[in-house]
Length: 110
Length: 231
Image 1 (spheres, rainbow over the protein chains, first blue to last red):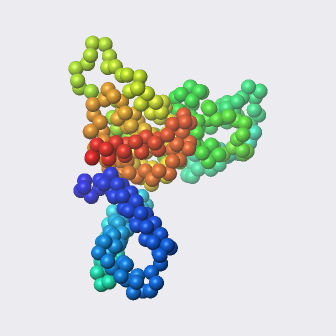
Image 2: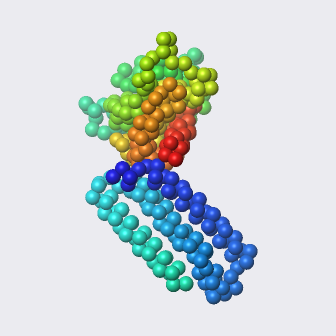
Image 3: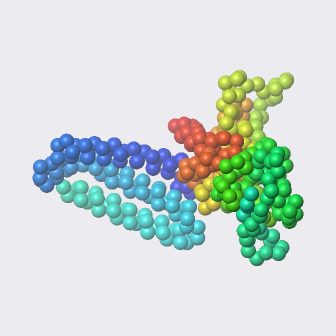
């Protein structure tokens, strides 16, 4: 229970994922601004290459973890009835897991 | 000078009301508390706490025109009329401007606000270098008026589980003390999603502290210490 509820772990995770996402977005958007992929094929080749694919998967995993901590915090602040909070967090968790799985499937198919 | 003051007597009223007052400001009245005392001469049922009259005891913390502060060190000059006086938000009201601070002091006691050191005491005293002593500046001055905690939205949402800015500032005061030997235990107690991490760095606490302290910074330092000790 302590590991799940540990404040520092979640707090640190949220900040580290934020930094990673920021760096990823700056670099990716910067690359698109400086040297935009000429076609969909060129975009696929760029995103689908080894290093970039791993970085993109990490971006979406980070996004899901970041969102989980944020939404969990919102629920802890505002949703006090335990049953309602558990149900809400289960829904959020399932939604985020489905989103992550979908993104990984999309990236794996490139 | 015109006032609009929160009135609630649980023995008589089913719900609180705002009552208008008109006060004649005396030639030597400088602070809000001076006029509040005059208003009490008009209506002796008007209830508020006060003691030292100089911002040391922290008794007369209240919500003044929407901001928490101490009536005794709030200058009359510059107060917009009618001056709205309410009890500090987030606290249960006992009567008029007096709030129940039981929960607040429970949180304060939970951080063990005293030195923990089981080493044999030296012959005279446990000494600190000037540099070690300087680390307590900005922490030891807290007078526990509750203005910060009563203005913290995170505390309004979870008053029973989030310790609040005042108690966390007090916790940091003893974590920062070179004579204390319970830092690890203190940090472990604080490393909790509710006790410490309900703080969203809204910084209302720092904004309203009548002593000019920064509970926000203290909370940040606690987080840094937990991360550092964890690594």
